[in-house]
Image (cartoon, rainbow over all chains, first blue to last red; front, side, top):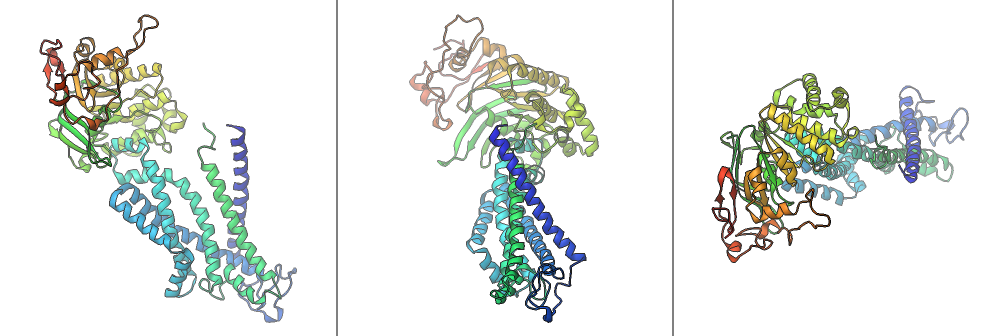
Length: 280
Length: 324
């Protein structure tokens, strides 16, 4: 292995570790909020509104006297839920469509890919706004909207990678051994496509968190009193000149989560890249 | 006869319409017999091999008959072919690195046809796979079975491929350049192994190669292909020692020989192999052949028969084997 490859490997390791730590923090916060938050996140306490951070309220209180730290912890839950389900929808439908396109070829492949292009033609946020405008605002609709946007991304990636795998001789060898196309798609193609999908999934997870924050900020995602980082940002807007920290903390939470997921994705990409992986 | 091919023709789709890559190919193969197919790149030998397995690229069109144990399997449905592949017909590929899935253990890949065709449980098939790996003379078959392809050398991988192809004791094994990617010393061992395993289980072998020495050593009969069709065929001895066809002769002369005088240059065949579509009629070798006459370019190839099934397809060769 050359010196530059070793260096790249070291870098990949560092970003992988930092990304992993940040994502662990996000998951830890969400898990913690299930059993404990300093205050109930939706408890309104108007006499103690807009308090500075202190020992009683680590990150202060918002315009209605709700504890910011508790809301951030509870908001992590929404972010993770949105990320998991949106990516899950994207993976489930996208991988199936992508594999089908690669295995069937011809008209079926063209039709699936054209459908994906059509979905791409609409900006993701715009489609999400359209969906939530039609079916009403709320976390569930936001999740579905973001998930639908993920389907063509995973479908395109799966098809492109699967076509590369299908061109390799071992799929022909599997056919020569008497396997059918469906079995080959699952047993031989899917495991070889998985690394690319894992990397893309972490990145789409981050995109989903951002999209949920944006939708909630616009009032189309999480509804009060449900805690959500995007909704907190939206609330903070009215207090921007009085207490700018109200926007800083949820903003920081979103930024760190997205940063962590992107680092994790980059780190995984390098770790799974056969050119950087040590042989033997 | 185990396998009888008559008037096989293969058309592949191309931007300029269907392109005929194989035509007028007829031959047969008895049980336990070994047949070599030689030819340069683009001569149609790999396409002929893939046609037997019905593994041609999408859109390929096959005409003619491929009779396997009397049944025409050309145009057989995919489901029926899947039952034959890996069970009665098996194939060994050229690149042992790319022909094994890098993410599956060797044992699982060797066991795959057994689970598929013999309905064995995973555990039973694994045990059988270890036995097969031992049979292809891999040392420490238990360890090899648990290994992933990257941990094996080229020769070991090709032995594993052979074990996989042999797993269901096929009647016919098609080996497409099985040793081209290997070192010369390993080549001979692999082919000897294949030949001896073939003899033990009365398995017929179709060995595709561009290497005349490999064919001479391991096959009883040989087909010489050029431009998508058979130029000369017959027992290896007759074809290689008493080559009648100008192409076979040119091929033999283009080969380095031990004991040739120092400084002697190899005699290359003039010109380049034609793109296989460019010979709509006449002999595909016309033009490169020093004996080309007008009739070579236009008339369909005649077949001249000699003793012991030695057949030559050339306008210039007469029944006594002399050039006209």
